[in-house]
Structures are given as C-alpha cells and as structure tokens.
Length: 377
Length: 260
Ligand SMILES: Nc1ncnc2c1ncn2[C@@H]1O[C@H](COP(=O)(O)OP(=O)(O)OP(=O)(O)O)[C@@H](O)[C@H]1O
Ligand SMILES: [Mg+2]
Image 1 (cartoon, chains in turn green, brown):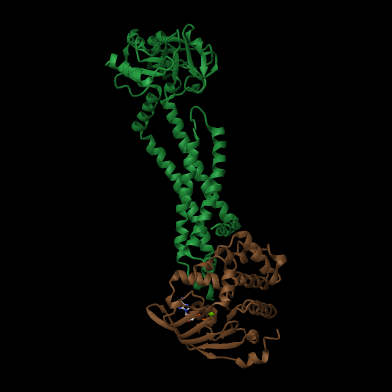
Image 2: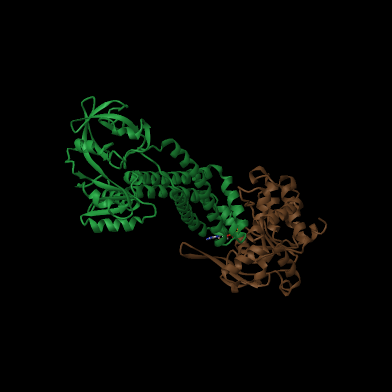
C-alpha cells in the first residue's frame, strides 16, 4: 500500500505544471468554502450580536417575540413583576425602535434607537472606539458606531444630530456594534429613546434580566412566563439562536450561501478531476505498462486515490493559510468572516471527499486501458 | 498458485526452482488459436500454435510484421487469453486461472521488456526499477536497495537518479532490463527489445539480457526482427500464417551463445 503511494506521488509531482494547476483548484475550493462559510457565520453573528453581548442573561419581551431588532411594546411595569421572581438579580427596561436621524447635509438616515436604563446601563454599547460608554447619560448623549460613519455623516464626538426631531449629541463611538439590518444602532438612555421614538414613557421593548449567581436561567424564564402570561422569556443563548434562525428562514440566506459554497466545491472537484484525468490521458501508455507488469485495478485506483488525497491535503493546507491571511486582511465588523475551527475542519474533510470522488473519473478511464497497447507498435 | 507468492517474489522464485512447478517446462502451448474481432468480422491471427520452451532456454520468435508475434507473446504473458488450445505458463494452465490469478502470475513470476522501453516518465531510473517490487508489496526502502543492486548489474549505478528523459536509448533499455528482472521472474518476455537501439547498443542489451537470464536459469522468449541478435538464441521459430515453424536454427549453432 505504502509502496504504491510513493510511486503515485512521485509521478504526480513530476508533472509540475499539471500538479500546480490542480493544487490551485483545491486551494480555490478551500478558500471559497471557508470565506463563504465565514461570511455566512459572520452575518449570523450580527443577527444576535445585541443579545450575545448586551450583558443580559434573560430577555423578557412580548409573547411571541422572535427577533431582537423587531420588538413589540410591552408595559414598563412588567419590570417590577420580573424583579420579584426568585433568582433575578437585576431587571431593567430596554427600548428599541426605528426612527430617522437628520444629517448635517440635510439628508436623513433610518436608525434603530436603543435605550438603556441610566442607573445600570444594562444593554448599553460595549466596544468603544472613542469616548466612554457611560458618557451616554450626558445631556442629549448618543453613541453611534464608527463603522457607520458614511451613513451617519461622519459623526465625531461632540457633533450634533437630530433624531425624531429631537437634539442628539454624539458622546462616543463604538467599534463594530452592527446589526443584521442595514439600519445603524444608536445607543442612548431609556427616557431619551422614548423621546426619539415618540413613545409613551410607560412602555419598553424588553426587560433585561441578570441572574443571581447559581440561578437556573430556564427555571427563571419558566417562572417569569408563569407570572406574566403575555410575556415570553428566553435565556440569552436561546434568544440569540431565535434571532439567527429568524433571518435564515426569512431571507433564504442559508440557501444562497449554501449554493455558492457548493459551487466552490464543484469547481474544485472539476479542476481536480480534470487535472487527474488529463494526466491519466497523457500517461495511458504508462498505465498500460503498469497493467502489463501486473498492476491490478485496485492498485491503480489506490495510486490515483493517493494522488487525489495528496492534492487535497496539500491544497487544504495552503488554502487554510490563505484563508487566515484573507480573514486578517478583509474581515471587518461590516462584513465579518468568522472561521471557527469546526468550519475549517469540515471544509477540509469536504474537500478531501470531493478530491476522492474526483479520482473516480480518471479511474474509469484507467480501467479501460488495455495492457496489450504497450506490445503493439 | 500459492497465496504466499505475492509477499516475497525472490523467495517465491527460488522455491519455485525446486518444486514440482519447475519440473514442467515454463512454456507449453498446444493448438493455440487466437482471433481478433474487427468490424464484425473475426480475423484469425494464431491458428494452432504449438510451442514448448524448457527451463533456462532462450527462444526467439521471428516472422513478418502482423504475423501475430506480439499477440503470442501477450498470451504467454497472460495479457491476452487464448480462444482455443492449451497454454501452460510456469506450470499454470491459463485456461483454469481467473483474471486475478493471471494478473498475479504476471506480476510475480513474469518479466516484460518492451520495444519502446515503457519507463515511467516521472520516475528516476532507480524508482522505475523498483516499481515491480512495489507492485508486489515490497516496502519502498527494501525495493530501492534491490533496485540499486540491479542497476549496478546493468552498469547504471551512476545514472540511478536520472529521469528517463535524461538517459540515452541504450541506457533506457538497460533500465527496462533491470526492471524486468526486479522480481526475479522465472520467465522473461521481450518484444523487439533491440528495435529502438543501434547495432552496438542492441547487441549490448541482448548480451546483458541473455547473461542476466542465464545466471539464474531463467527462461527467455524474445520476439524480434533483428537478425543481428539471432546468435543469442538457443532456438528460433518463425511465425507465419498463424503457425510456428522452426526458423534459422543453423545460425544459432554457428553463432553460439555460450561464448558470449
Ligand atoms: N487489438 C486488436 N484488434 C484487432 N486486430 C488486432 C489487434 N491487435 C493486433 N491485431 C492484428 O493482429 C495481427 C497480429 O498483430 P501482432 O501485433 O501480434 O503482430 P506482430 O507480429 O507483433 O507485428 P509487428 O511485427 O508489426 O509487431 C495484425 O494483423 C494486427 O493488425
Ligand atoms: Mg509486435
């Protein structure tokens, strides 16, 4: 077995041009699958970013809540009911809603205003580029994201805007808090958010809960739902997943990303198959010779397989390095490329499988090679 | 055939030398017929060939182009199957062997030398010689040591790491000879081994082949047009009209191979 591999690899590498072509195909496949998958995961992460990083252990909202960015109003007084549930350490109202920001040049931009309770600032902006998150309590204070500079007319700390015809002053910029929607987030305090959104002061969108140490999130959620039949309550991970699933279902995102990933694999497969096939066609005589010398189909297939697996392995290695470079160079909060180990691992396995499959085509040709060929002039 | 054979070709052949297998002549052909079906009509090529080659003998097959010499050689080498007649190679009745057994027989006990050398382009001389050993499952390191010894025997030690494209025709054929001898086959089949070589290198290659074959009592069947090498033969047959006739046997006695 090992013996044949060494023959196979030597003949493969000997044809440098073809070998490199196939390698490029595999690398292309690996990069495409990882970047596509990474962009997909990055986009999904944006869908639940607010939930994942907002600091709350449990999200309480209107019955049937399904997406953090698209919340229904609930009575603010639910906060008190939630606070009385055993295991709840902190419960604060949280308000989300769409409004319009007027820009210095007279244009306007739709924004998603987020209001957090000023005493705890639970659910406030967290990754800051300029200013401090706590500055949001200052007069007219808002925090916008530095990555949304173009949409929001390049807001600097101290610059003024108008939201819902109310004055707003940028007191800080966050660094990469972007949602799934193209609408920029604007963090502010709860009361100011009510003003920006023209909502009565007795409503909010969620009650954010932090648990006491050791409290069981699912149990607390269950109790909240029991006490507030019109409310839904979900642990952070569950609600985050719900947000992600909502977008996947609503947009068919999975299908489009899946298709392009599949296409990437297919291209890789075609290139590897075609290269192996061409190199087999080129060496029909040699396969005839091997057969004449007593090589059986199993041995010949193992040689082709060795070549395919070797190309897959080497291509994957190069591809993964390239993916790391691409992620380093091109991944931004706007279009994050998230490549966890499982994605890299799965794509490598997939590429190896694809290469193995693609070795079947040349084998089909090799099967038909007649060793008699080498005896005829 | 013993299933043990495919592990150690060398031991297999050595053992073969003492067992009953070798008592039978390595090549026994009786009433062999072979035809090719081409475009619906069958063209008979061999029409009742009889041939018996004793162990250690060197037999030449000559005949006009298209007379079926390569076809006969392919049958002796288990590449083609006969349509009719009995063919016993190294004690095995080919008619009773399935395709797999025939492949094993070819791999482990028969060596081939081709007109156009048929070396694998991507492999060095050394690795080319090692291929048959590796097909037999000999580990690469062992195979390479044995391949090097064979290259030494054909005088190509210094060129061991050259690719076929860097070798002359004569050198290529010597590599091919070494390769054919790699598994220490009991039977060596050569199809026009000197046709692509000039006179000097042709004689040189044939002398080497004869010498290396004789050293271990191997049987040699050579198809050739090349009258210059006929003196190396113990017996010469001529294939014509689908049958074998004794050919220029006189030449052999006159030339004498023993002196070479
Ligand atoms: N695969 C095949 N299908 C059909 N006819 C074939 C096939 N192989 C050989 N033949 C025919 O069979 C005949 C014998 O061919 P073969 O190659 O055995 O002759 P040869 O004596 O070796 O000739 P040469 O001296 O030119 O090598 C030729 O007429 C050839 O055309
Ligand atoms: Mg011929």
